[in-house]
Length: 337
Image 1 (cartoon, rainbow, N blue to C red):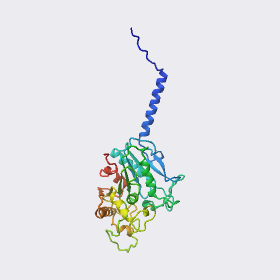
Image 2: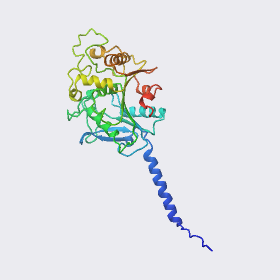
Image 3: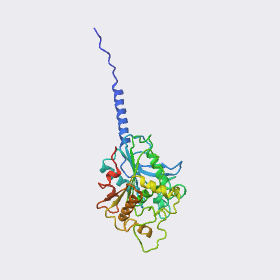
Image 4: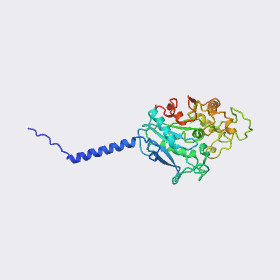
């Protein structure tokens, strides 16, 4: 006659402790994976630039240095002239919600802060203060003329491309609106990390007031002699700093080869929102819409690029309208292959 096997009995107290521990671990994992969706300090993080201690603050939807296997794409959005990264983070969150992409997309909005000139941003210890105006075209920090906003963008891209944090990342999109669009236009053609990251990068240039034109021709004329119309950042001449480290020919090659979309508001035709009315900008066209259409068309014709021009119906100079439009969502949140 076989005796029944003895069963181990776990004391009730121990069982309850184990269940409580499992619940805590599960809750912690769920919390860590949940996107951060408020434009508050809870959703910010500092990115160290170079070897440090210089750093810049970003809003982000997930921690940048914590391993997250759910993230398959990243979207970096560069703010406008008011440096209102908090508002741009809200607009980026709204776009991600509409695209159903909050859980699998890392959203990053850098605050390109400046306490110089007419800019009065408060700064944290070691936070870089950038030039109040030239930050949008790769300008230097106030304290170190060898550290530029384009170097900052390099470091953010490298951080996102790290496989120990985002092992399943498939694509990065960098987008900018208004002054942020000026930033992305110049950065797209001049950066030297695009081919080295191991992750494809796409660029979305939205409603900038001007572009870095590829030669000395322009689609419009003005009554002013405008002798400086072809100087950087309106043209390629007299470049310095980050953009000055590369030849004109390589700038054109990189501009043409990198996937870029010009996202333009159908009714961005009024001189509002920091519109650049200088003669150098007016030679590129009378409105932001006209300038974007002319530049995109010229680059495609002259450099045999395959850039795309997308005009957003009924949108003017408004980042929220542009980035949450149905035609913009597939550009900002491309489908995974």
